[in-house]
Amino acid sequence: MTLQTKPTKPAAPKVEEASAKSESALKSFLSGGIGGACCVLVGHPLDLVKVRMQTGGASGSVFGMLSSTLKREGVRGLYRGVSAPLTAVSPMFAVSFWSYDMGQRTVKAYGQYGMTEDEKARPYTLSMGEICMAGAISAIPTTGIMAPTERIKCLLQVQASDVEKGLKPKYSGMLDCTKQVVKEGGIQSLYKGTVATLARDIPGTIAYFGMYEFAKKEMMKVQGIDPKKGELSVVSVLTAGGLAGMACWTVGIPADVIKSRYQTAPEGKYSGIGDVYKSLIKEEGYAGLFRGLRPALIRAFPANAACFLGMEVSRKALGFMD
Image 1 (spheres, rainbow, N blue to C red):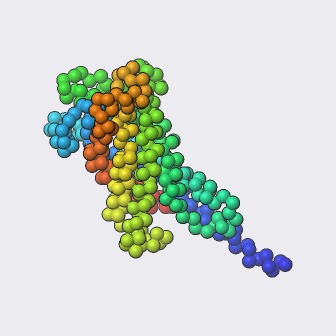
Image 2: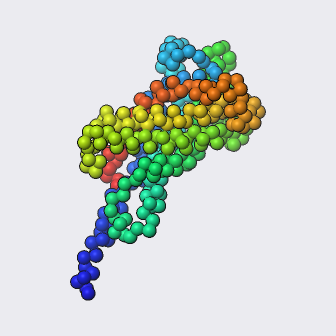
Image 3: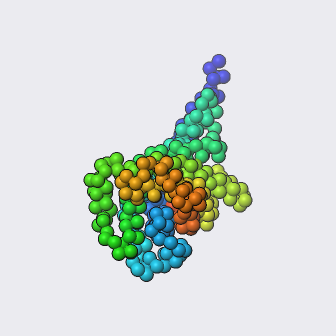
């Protein structure tokens, strides 16, 4: 009887090997932060154009607006309001990729529920549905950082447009803007538009991570790369990341328009995001929900290509943390 039980003992080491191969949560956090910084630095000028178009502060072609801003304000003008997203986007992306990692572990644990230890030790591949669910989970903690910084960023970007028209600036910078917002409406005022941010980011992150994983999988299939052994080229990672960003914004732009209008409106103008929606449809029709889509998509490809490349490179460099 003793001899018959010996073959079952290697099962325990298999479980340990499987757990040892799981990636470090800290590595996901750090690599996500690096990817976020890359995203902001590449994409902020076009984000500036998007917000000004959405809030009615400017009109014209995307590249025409970029050119005129560069002539009037210089390179510094293209990065107006960048301090708020750069300060927050790195930790926000860090939290996003960490949350996505945690989401993957959660859906994997759910998928493995009821399995034996031997079955759990086998490689587990997440389905597209499970990947999308993990993406949705990642949006919830990220919004806690995203909502207040988006509010400050939008206020500063719209102010810059008002200054161009000859109006006096209300805020001297990110910290002054934050102080005044809190003074006028309390801490809760910083979180104005949180529901709209969630309405944008939950479907947005489903499309974001879903498209990235789908694009990588399809490119590996086309190029004949074994997902377990091979790696995609830099160009392929850039392409997958760019497509992910475009998918995210295509899905999320209507909620983003409502969020931008609500966050930059004077206190009391709207009773809530429902009121913003009704007012927008009445004044501009349903096309108004897609205002700023062009600069958002033009920005999305290079910004998120840089984000995912920065994330993948740093994740590989931090492999010793697993």
